[in-house]
Length: 417
Image 1 (cartoon, rainbow, N blue to C red):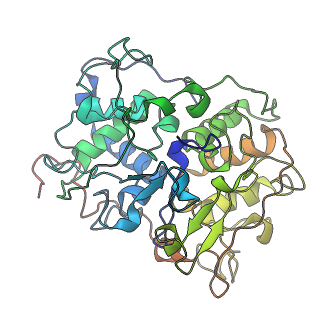
Image 2 (cartoon, rainbow, N blue to C red):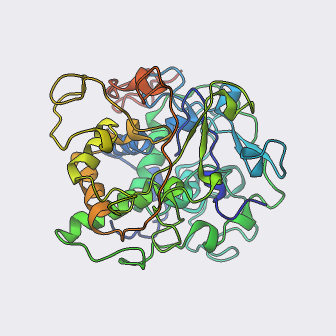
Image 3 (cartoon, one colour):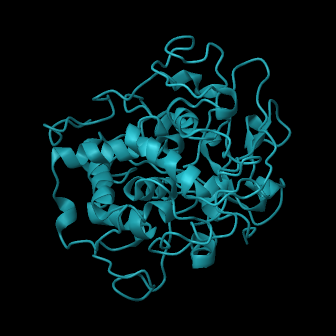
């Protein structure tokens, strides 16, 4: 059904509005009844995770909680995704259109009718909340431990297969934020298309990786020098932010892990051509080789250059190894004429992660991943503007402490619209 070189969750059609993809400790089992409780700190933690995991690039809102469209789902056809070989070859079959849902707690058109446990089960197990009871699940095997015998999975490209490796408390925090930290917004999103088995045939370990995560080091990794806690944190961040979803592999043990594009099906079309083949402008972007190969990967860049790429979106091959203290071009070592990473790299979300997480990612990529020789052609981009293109509208817009799409954490039960 889906070409084997690409997991269905990674078949993302990027458009001129820049729809980006949506990745240390083992998670524990859910505790009965615990998902209905939570503090303001839990809601704020959930908010941070939603921001840094780039939820709004699919579910709308420009990674800005003050946006009028924050997490309200598809409002335009350019936000939809084509899943299947039709993404590469127009007219090819099978072809499905999937549509990011309204994540606000509206009772009729959003997630307001689902419990926090149902949302947790969606994030941990990929189960559609509208077709999965509000029960504790204790197994990953259909028919066991309350796992539905005939599971109905979330439509691609929802990256639950990466998020399922996050700690329980983080997934509960996301559920708490979506249910109790957001104001409801009415926006009815048409159901996503799907095969008769609700993607169940695609949810096999060879296609989505294993759970829990493979032990470190795998055949694609090496024992790293330096702090093992730092390396473990970087590995966790890379895998749960779904870097492998674009850059190769399904988990750390799989073929092509982080080695970059090896097949045209791994490329992205950026611009109107992602929706209408042949439309202009149209660019092809190609996920790079993230292994520390000195010639074809990131081996020739310092960890600071990688940090600067993640924090500021600056291409390491065109940005010196210097500390940057500003986000304004020409100030604080920020290049006067910056060359940005090609879309859909979601650095505009990752820049909100703590410094220690970004340093950990840099350390893991440089020290703990085995080098692989794989030359990836440069991504295409507009010649008349910096490489950031569309993301300029949000480069210097940090998330506000409270947005017009959110509830106050101190009076969330009374502030509704």
